[in-house]
Image (cartoon, rainbow, N blue to C red; front, side):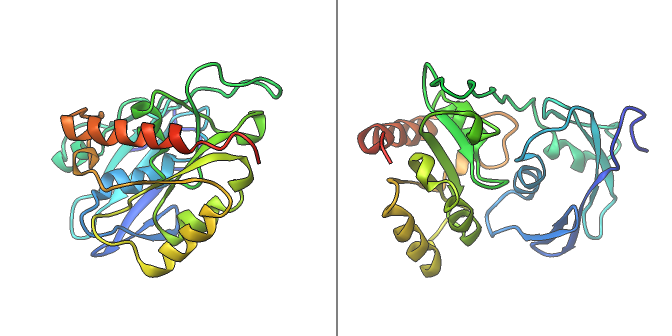
Amino acid sequence: MASDLTARPAAVIAQLNGPMWTVEGRTVEVAAGVDPSSFLLEQLVGGPLGSEPRDIDVRPAGQERFTLTLAADGAITANGFSNPAALQWLRPPRLVMAAPSVGRVMPDGWALYGAHPGAGVTTWAELLHGAEIDDPTSYDGRILLVARTTLQGVETSKAFTHRAGAILMVADAPGKVPADVRRGIRVLSGVAPIIRVPWVPALRGTLTINKTAAVAKVAAKTEAAIRGNWKDTP
């Protein structure tokens, strides 16, 4: 049953078959080795958050459907725990820091912006001690652009390369990046520095970031690469 506080119609995440799902009517494919709950929720909440709670109707193929509630702060809770499958979909609040007004520069750290839903910007903002921004036009400085190593990641990044001090290309799955994506990344590298982030199994499907030695090592190497390649001027 939908929450009484819900101001908008429930969002629907439905499994078609195997790796194919729909999120709000948009068909997406969950890559092999990727946690469906994390990927699909990032597709839904990767953009600006609303001011009111909203229900999420999850419909796995061949399984009992269940309802989640997306709060205004990005937290995801279950409306009751009758279905154990709902537990892996729960999430803590999404911490999004507002960008400074135009004409000001972020005082500490980087301003990270996700080029598309599911880019992983929230995770990397925390790992790099930066600030996730919702609107790059309200920030008068160079941004750290975050995208996945997919064609969507390449294409959506093109609109922001002129603002990017660097582009964080986060692996979308284990294994080799497809040839067409590699070509697209080479094109982007002609405009902004590219920092490649490998697939990190410890970051898969977690409610909070488990800062293991492996995660800390990747984060440190990534931070060093950003600092060594950062582009301050267009």
